Length: 431
Ligand SMILES: [Fe+2]
Image (cartoon, rainbow, N blue to C red):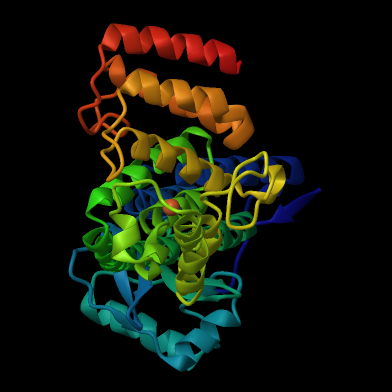
């Protein structure tokens, strides 16, 4: 069944009858060409250019222009057969309303064309006197009016066939969605850029705040070390070793940060211990031992008053002298009662204390300290923590990591060959 292509609406005519099958084939090919040119384009401008060319070719139209909405007016974006510099078309409320009412191409010469459309056509023709507008197509979706497609007369001067009008209607609908999608992508991209800038600023602010926070924490630790000169630098070294072990165990970042702070401040409770006890070179009396053993709980009391951005800092400091077999203090906790962070700090604290000078003894040689540690890993500390400790120390002595030393930051009187041999043996025992 065919359809008459004769048109009367603009006084031009064709007289062929086109079979329905050929009409559908024409429409499908045109739409295929159109959608593939949109997807093939390397950028938005190229997609608009290709879209206009396919539309003009499909409808055998020589001249045409695509105006895209920008800052409240429709601005010429791409054209064929027209001079550059066509002024923008005002995007009035009346024109938008008229465009929204027309999902199909609007014949511009028709007597019944609405006033706002007539004005837009007149403005364009006034700017380009050699251009006669035959059709104006609205590029509109439910989310807005994105542009207008202005078409001149066909090559033969004939009116568009119903098939061409129908195909043109579908193409403008696809083009409208294409432009709307581009707007969304552009908006998201713009928002993303703003967000990235904001995130960058926040990260810088946060880094600054963290530095201030850590400086405050270090100042607090320095106050303790001023009172107990034998522990000078001890807190920082314990923190470095603890963080290295925590990372080696794969603990979450916030736990690593909590362990770092708790390590720096684990002995802050010694502020309540007398200087005489802290620096006494002779063995402590039972009463003095009881006195010094109060410091983890005092650390807890002090740190509980601070709102740290990381969890359990005060608890980790309180439990850093607890031992798995219950022989520790202040509460004699056992096994799972002792948090992993406290087990890590306990081992790091003991190791650093052993290889440091104390009022009552000189520092121990590295292998002596490691031997003592190895012998009580299972009873006092934690098998996994012990393995990571020995592995990290081994890598450092073997010169594997390029970073600054963590475990061997001071002179420890050892031969690297002997130390590596000893550590390999210890790791076998801990397997
Ligand atoms: Fe302590």
